Length: 366
Image 1 (cartoon, rainbow, N blue to C red):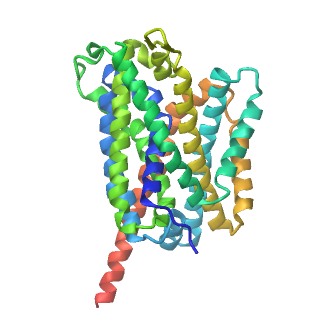
Image 2 (image 1 turned 90 degrees about the vertical axis):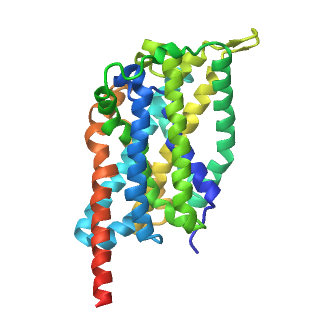
Image 3 (image 1 turned 30 degrees about the vertical axis):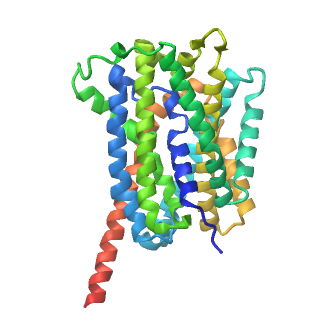
């Protein structure tokens, strides 16, 4: 019997996955004080992608995940090749998050600990998290999201209440025109984080109420997108011109909070949000890779977890340091590599699926 997840669990995972560590950083920093507007535009583009591509594929084949759809409509040679590429894409996305988790752990928590030991512990923890399957992992999201919401709400209230925000830092809006805002939004902001929901083509089929998947997906996407936009606006309002040059601006901003000489040094809460977001995102990609490997290679769940985990752990040493990791991601991945899997391939696939279904319907009518 196939595993099932509730709509509440699905919605919780969408929110945690999309938010991830995104609110902690200034996205679309090239747009300067209009970065929040670039994020909003990226969110709208991502919504079009979700509504017009990913959910269309789901509605055509609600009983299939991404790899099953690819194999059905592309056939074995081409379908297998594209599927392997998607497994590697999921693994690489998890690799980047493992490395980010490891590097930031050394920077903020465990400066004397070997990087390899931290990343191995992360991979083992993620592997154990998905050992029980999709349903167990999604229940973890349902349990975690109220804690995340409370912490973010506390941070925002403290930032506003202690006078850290200055709205003059975001004025005037669009004083350099729309072009820098659009250039920062597409494809970078679409690629990260909004286009990443292509992964959920692996999970839609497990929903216990499939008729409501589209509604819950769009609702949770909008909540997450507006939340990320708001956070970027608050970062710019709080830090001004310093926001683009600080590695984790929200942590820097909240470290300045001081309330009645009692509530101070709450940046550990930001660190908790950072590690929670990164952990859920890397584990989600890990699970997507495992499901793909299981389907393509007909392996057991444990064997697929070990294989994917080995690839992810080994791949986490691709970069020499944190700065190279960040530079390569922004210079190449967001502009060239990720759009292939998030935009180009899904659009091509939905066109093929729509064409073949129309052809089949026409033949059936005749």
